[in-house]
Image (cartoon, rainbow, N blue to C red; front, top):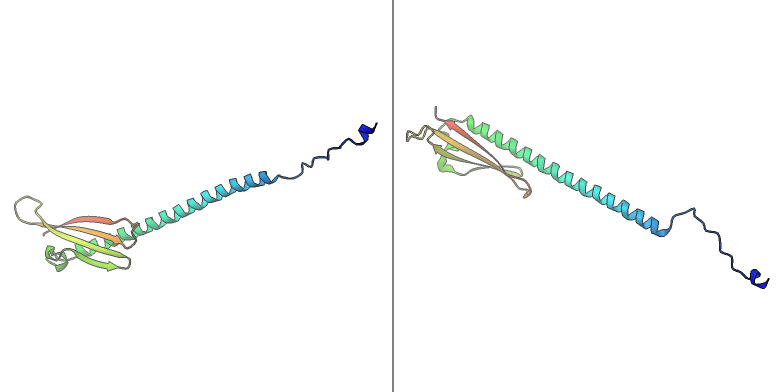
Length: 137
């Protein structure tokens, strides 16, 4: 009888909450997810900026080419002796090189090849280059 009086009783187990380890695991999984979304957001921002710069550079190159196409064949901006021609527009530098060309192979230069290149001050931006041939009319 003495043995039963001093027997230790185990306290009831409370299963109503989370353990500290479970909370740490949930926080770790949530943190990985949040970091993945943050990396995705940074990548999207960089890609959008690159696309914007590329679009602006293409528009500047096309605009400069249209200006050059409207000039007379003998204009100073179409003279190969002035190569490389350059115009700075904001963060972009527009260069064009003019070369005399013989398209029909008769030994006479009867056209000019214009190569317009646009470079951005941002080193991550890609250069844009457009070429066009102006015939002597």
